[in-house]
Image (cartoon, rainbow, N blue to C red; front, side):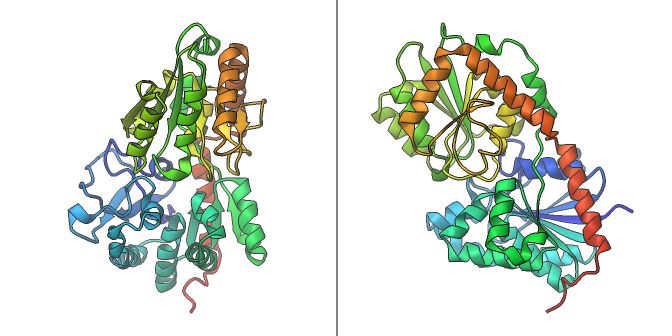
Length: 405
């Protein structure tokens, strides 16, 4: 019998041009092969687009008038709103109540709740206790990183552990960190990696990687993600300004967010505005097109879980230069399948980029090795969904204590 699963998430692509929580949607699509999936997510400022091709049901939760529904689906989501002390945070209690109420109503007709991120984990955990349904919570990185500096995030993580049958992390580094923080709960923490869409692997099958990085023409750098502070995009702009003028180098910052204006101002102040492109957010279906035109992928984040943009670039066979942080180290081995640099070290980043531009053979070697690494690990969405479906079966076969006080 197919399990009936409630997938709870505060980030989800409600429109075709949305980049919010695309990887959660990919997981939902593949889970639907073995389970009946209903996604519950906050409504946005624009109504969700009807899509008869969705293999799951989508339920949006209304917690405020439409023009005020800016709390969840903007770049960075609720954590960025908290950091910026956005007045829209006044709607947080209404959002919590609305999400819990909807989760309780749907859970009574379902078998299990699966939450994404700690905030959703607490919402689903409360609904699970009220309905006696088991809960699985997936943590995706920053909600664990914030534990070291935020009492609120420590409380959220502790509640997730207490109210979840299993706590899933998307990287082994995150798994080890949570287990070290809560050794008594270590047996309930597990690691399931995100997948990568097949189209990115197909992109990596093309030949001519060395010719794309040839020093005889313009080099094109690309970074993909929300334009928020922790992504460290200012480091890339500063590094670009240090690169020699020959060959010319340009940069695409693909995404949107509250740092857009400050990044544009920084580029102007450093004299590289004509070499920095800020096209904004694009539909997830178009990201591979941008990657196909790039020579080097750059990730300068100060903290990450396991960045999906990095996985996609590796699958596409792009040479990668990335910050040396947890969540990246498990994917990139310096000088074996990519280059690493110290977070916020723009001079070091510039040196790595110059090295790649001066050595097309090295760039080709690193790009091919990155793709081979992911293929050997079997990182696909069907494989990720299969592991979650197995976890669902374990949860449903275990006598539940979720509803106990």
